[in-house]
Length: 196
Image (tube, rainbow, N blue to C red):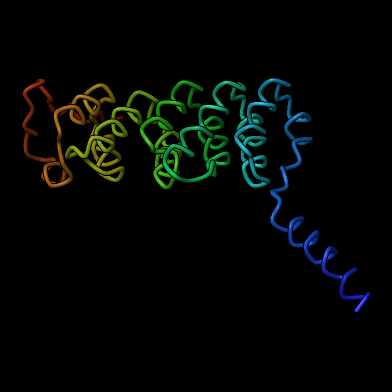
């Protein structure tokens, strides 16, 4: 009987300890150069181990403490966790500015679409083109796909004309008929292909 009396408080203590939330180890954040006040803000948001890893990766890409914190808050406001640190790193490595990355984050385009944006940057498209495409997609407006962008470029269209086509809502179907003039109120015209 005496052992039961001693065992009951031990069981209760174990149950209480297992239900306690453990805070994530923030030492990697400190080692990545995240400032003390930003780390405290992240701890208040109950950052988890996976998010620590993602923020360390975003910081390695040159993202500021303020923007890392904003990206985490954006993810949380959408009911998820911040899992796009590697996407941020790849976009920055491909030449996207920090503000461009933040715009994609605000548009909720750092997830799966970040891979496509990364590919466009590596293919030589500039940040304004990628962002214009993301803005239209975020609004649910008709636009063309990345392969259509590449087709227009291969047909000799300048990037300025391609951006105008995106703004004008040119679709993949219209691009497939690239030998025909593309309709555009903005004066989208085919550039002659240069031959060496």
